[in-house]
Length: 449
Picture 1 (cartoon, rainbow, N blue to C red):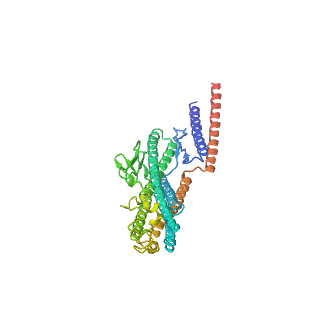
Picture 2 (picture 1 turned 90 degrees about the vertical axis):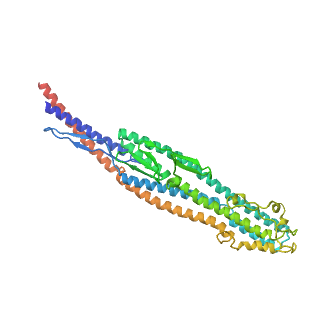
Picture 3 (picture 1 turned 120 degrees about the vertical axis):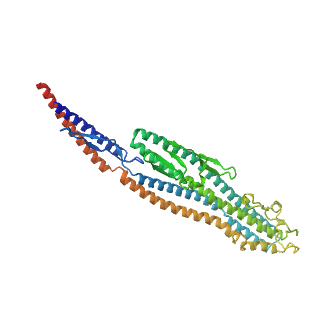
């Protein structure tokens, strides 16, 4: 009877082991479309006979995956997120500097009106047309300046918002580390990988799993954001000098060290592309003011007076586009437009010709014309946008390739899982039949006793 009881125990353990396999296969099939899910496998272990009866038992479900491949996929996801954010931000900057009449078009319109004035220097309508074109140029430059300032503000806001989100994700990653250490649930490992990917997409950096099974997350430059079960905050605060949002982990400034993710893209656009575009616009406004004023003050209006400015003089380059303005006296009275040479009378056009000559004179900073300088602002941003879009295409290919590799290793294969499900179900049915037979034998034995 003891042998029969041993066989009954063997059968019971066999049913339990096969049912574990059924449950794991069913769970894999159920999660075939779950984002980030890694298929699981149950390993069955044969028990030693003692001396005749052995049996089987199942281990805990094991998650199928590669930490090395997952790390590379996270890095690729961070690069792709940065490229997309960079391209999107640059496209926005390009639209801000190129939508509507551009600065070079408005400069061209001003030169055209000055050319018409040179043919009739005493004509009030021609003078009004020049002043109107100058007003349009002022409005255009100031609008572009305001647009770039708004882009700066929006970049700072995105950086601040994403820093808060990164802090929340870091805490969630640390909490998941704690839960995983307690339970060992494979689905928590999937969740941890997804959180780490989201964090990489925000701030770049790298996640690694150490020998203790805990995941650490380190920003570019070495600042530790998550150390096992402990998470630091990524703090955003405005710089007291520039007003730009700066990021820190503890007392450490990490702004310049974040070179990946959406935050890295916004920092790069803000501190380089936007700063360059705003600097170029300020320099252009300063150069226009300086060059036109030099010609205008040397010539005379209809009343024969010289020394009047065409635009309000600028003391410095920084902020010149925001402060760019037509001289109030000229704005109120177009007769003060200096179209004549000093002492030549109201019919002279040499002042107008001198202003028109600025159209081809290489008087802008950098040895270009004012029009070329205006065009370079747009072309520089457009070239950067084009390069960023190319980076998006490249990084998308890399990310897709790594995703395919991950799916081939960790993804659920329905055919395989259905085969496993059938195999475990048949084995469970066989063990059930075995137990039923042993139970009948025990019943018969008991009745005979």
